[in-house]
Amino acid sequence: MSMDFNLYMNEIVTTARNEMDAAGYEQLRTPEDVDRALERSGTTLFMINSVCGCAGGIARPAATHAVHYDRRPDHLVTVFAGQDKEATFYARDKFGDEHLPSSPSFVLVKDGQMVAEVGRHEIEGHDPMSVITHLQALFEEHCEEY
Image 1 (tube, rainbow, N blue to C red):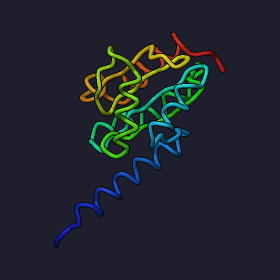
Image 2 (image 1 turned 90 degrees about the horizontal axis):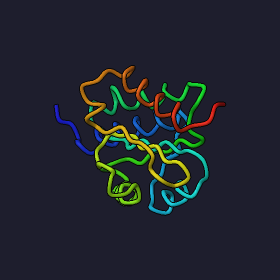
Image 3 (image 1 turned 45 degrees about the vertical axis):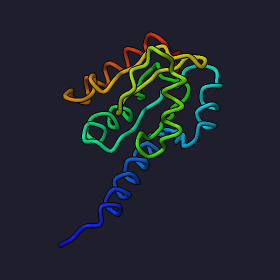
């Protein structure tokens, strides 16, 4: 039995994108998309998506469930590391020198400036609920109540 690697990867990527779409996240595929997201006023949660196991088993479920909270970001967006390479590189550059590029990860932006992040080291090896709690603590500090 042989398997076409590209077909397999395309299916994983499509599933990962669909999960984020269903959770209400806007896909940013170009540097121009990233600029438009950063120009918005208020808070924006960037989810840097990935095909790795900790993205599928921890980060995406956390991204989906963390936003069901009294305080949450005004905007939800995602860039896909390894897929939308230019958009991901551009976003990481815009986050500033303090940003630690990793995927999966989360970056919380307020009025175009990074105010907090959750790196891969705070996702991998942790359970989804601890990542949800971490994100919601950031929402509590930086976001408005709905």
